[in-house]
Image (cartoon, rainbow, N blue to C red; front, side, top):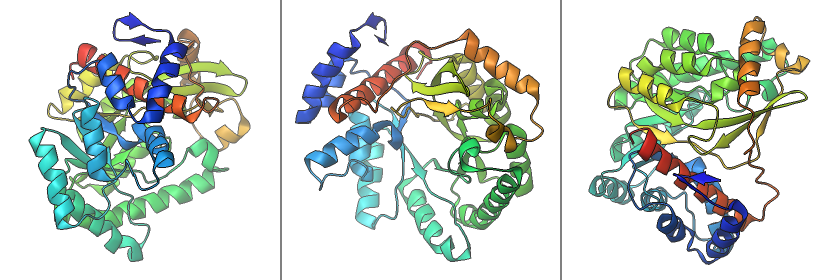
Length: 360
């Protein structure tokens, strides 16, 4: 494993980190062994789900995802901000969260699900109101949860889901306009680039834009650089991720990996986003988990992608073959303490790379 410019014995590090994780000292260990320098790249809550689970097993009353707890934890790791579900906070919790962010010069992004129907609008507005009160720069959402090639069986099911997504955003539009909250829809392994651009055109709303995920669209056979460059003018926030890839019988494996260790030219992506939006904030999204299976050589996959060119498949598989990974992480086979240790090492390595190579 490479962190910064040094090479470490991964298993030895995991054993040492896991022992400290069991005592609750993992964050301090990671900072001492990686870097204490701050980074302007924020974290997404999903970066620390294993840490949360470990803490909860030790003490069920502790919830790392309570917004102020999570912001403090992100700051302790050297991150410059946070993207997380805020929920509905009372005035005291709003004040505490906003004061801590301002004191330490951290930015906040929210995560909010769109209204499912008319009856859900009040819930949505309460969440958006809290995001506005804490000073969130953007609120990230998804409109087609799950992975298209796993969730659906036919093009008709995809069309129905896209129609529901359009309706949800139509319900959200007057709320985000009212509260002046930038609502960032992630390219979440759901719609290809042309479909997502058509959705933005239909909505025609200055307050609905993009959470640009630099890795997701690769699983849909889109050109990842074309996606980033096309969405950049509409970007409100970013999920910055690298991906490790390798062929397998039904397509390819796609794994989150520390920044700089995968197959993407992250500098090109970051430059395109910064050129379009000089003040744009970025968040690391690195989910420490087993690699995903992208089944692009199966009939089921193509049932939900009618009309996609074989040229797109060829380009994608060419990339997979040119950059076969030897560092895919299989996490589920590890004890929880080692999973949490690996997760924190992944975050530390990514923040270090972002600071030293990408200008964060």
